[in-house]
Image (cartoon, rainbow, N blue to C red; front, side, top):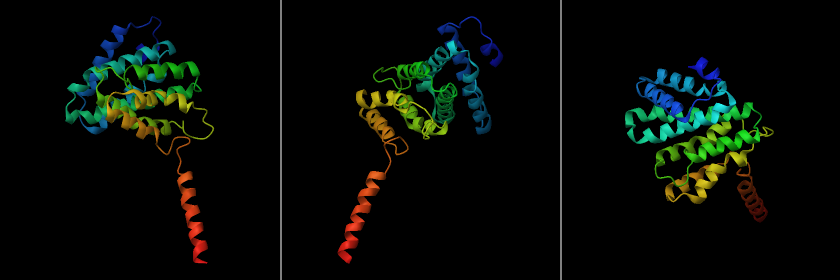
Length: 212
């Protein structure tokens, strides 16, 4: 599969990609035991860096459409491995963007793909479970690829755009709350505890003066 995808000289159609991802979805569905599941999730997400640049966005769009379509059929015993798979795809996508020096056009293209499905604001066909999980792991994966490190060059504000639009526009209160919680993560630039610590320190100094 890696050889086939990396050597494509003719574009795969959206239908081709949906068929491919349905097959890959059921490969994960049939995978038993944690270690093989983890290995398969890593193997599938490792396809992203070897894709021709023109195929990356269509490939990811087909992945997210497939996950969204099948989400309601995933039983509780299988859910954990699909949560892992979607996390790995988000992380691998961010890693591709990082390795491409956060090229503006590619970043915007990936954000558009995420907003179409994973972070879609209003489409009722997208399961809220997909939204919740993607929001839940997004900051973790930003940190994992080094995007939150000083001097990384990552356009964190742009990457958080899909979450911000969910927080502002989702008709589901719980989704808005989850997105706002993620946007308030103290690991994100500007969300540190310095202000609060400074206030506490000031109060401590005043109290010390009274004791004297």
